[in-house]
Length: 79
Image (tube, rainbow, N blue to C red):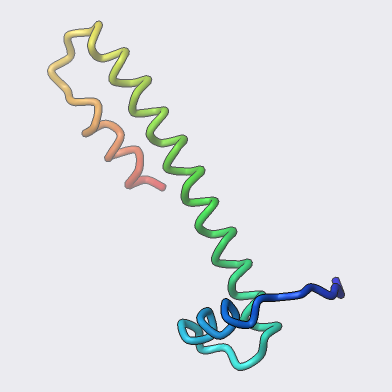
């Protein structure tokens, strides 16, 4: 998609210092891909923390002798 946007030169210059890209277009593409990856990871962590809290709440009521974190670790390692 073609678009015209006004980008802050100082941010472009700083972002470029962290990247191997040679064009502004490639830098913007890399920044967007990184942003999406970070947000996906945050969403996964939020979901994982919610799952941990739900299981902890359940295991507090049940005497199992198994730590729910061990169960979640096993679940996470399958992914």
